[in-house]
Amino acid sequence: MNTLDPGPLGDPAPGTPVPAEKGVLIGDEERAEALAAPAAPAGRRARRDGAEASAQPGVATTGDPSQPVVRIRGLRKSFGDLEVLHGIDLDVHAGEHVVLFGPSGSGKSTVLRSINLLEEPNSGSVCVDGVEYGPGLPGEEPAKRGKPIELRRKVGMVFQQFNLFPHLTALENVALPLRSVKGMKADDASRKAAESLRQVGLLQRAAHYPGQLSGGQQQRVAIARALSQDPKVMLFDEPTSALDPELVGEVLRVMHELAEAGMTMVVVTHELGFAREIGDLNVFMDAGVVVETGSSELFDHPTDPRCQDFMRAVR
Image 1 (cartoon, one colour):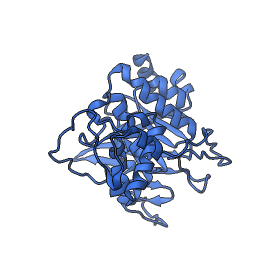
Image 2 (cartoon, one colour; image 1 turned 180 degrees about the vertical axis):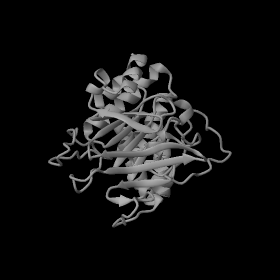
Image 3 (cartoon, helix red, strand yellow; image 1 turned 90 degrees about the vertical axis):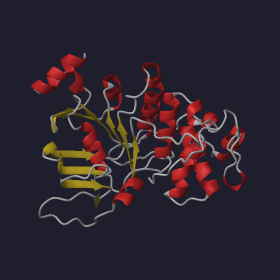
């Protein structure tokens, strides 16, 4: 996504309508409602055998269900002389929800950021939708090698911080990358943005500025912005860690709904109750390596001593 300078405009006064492109009055919430197409029927969770897939807006799956959407092999990453990832292997299939958890500093966020090349791996393979974006494995020549900008059009990411432009409404924050990155016309971008806000339950807040929204609502706008790109996979990097405790639930509810709709997700979180509910594959990391993986049973019956110690400490 392009980084655009919000400029010195500051926050408009609450309730002040802001004219948008082609005569759309962003201050008019009824107009935002009209922009959104009728909601699609609730999608069923996608089966990993590929027999069915959700038709929900913003939910994408690979064409070949036998191949993972994300395939990581031998991933290594160093910062200076310090190696923080020591040969990570991970597969994420269409419709699957992978949870990375473990102590702080274990390398979870670095794995996530390496998937969309916010951190460039020193070595190893990062394949997304069958295209190699990492350095690759020794002796293997990938059939296709992609560019970072192409990768980020396939992979949506939600960060700890919301990163919203304060002088733009919720609708404009979602529509901006649709115009600047995807090249959509203003009316089409506004319509798509309204659809995405409806997905996260915020269409009625389309005309509000970030300063008029709670932290949970701002994070939901950030999720809508990522969803609007129709990603193959969504990455969530501790999306509730910057929120007050009473606001965590509304963000987790949206993420749970996305999971049930069939969105392919990789989530770094300390919310282990939530992880237990949605995680198809739960990955415990420590000191830059994958220590143990498993279903929700992993939280109750870990077999590795380090994972056992961690679970005892957080109960």
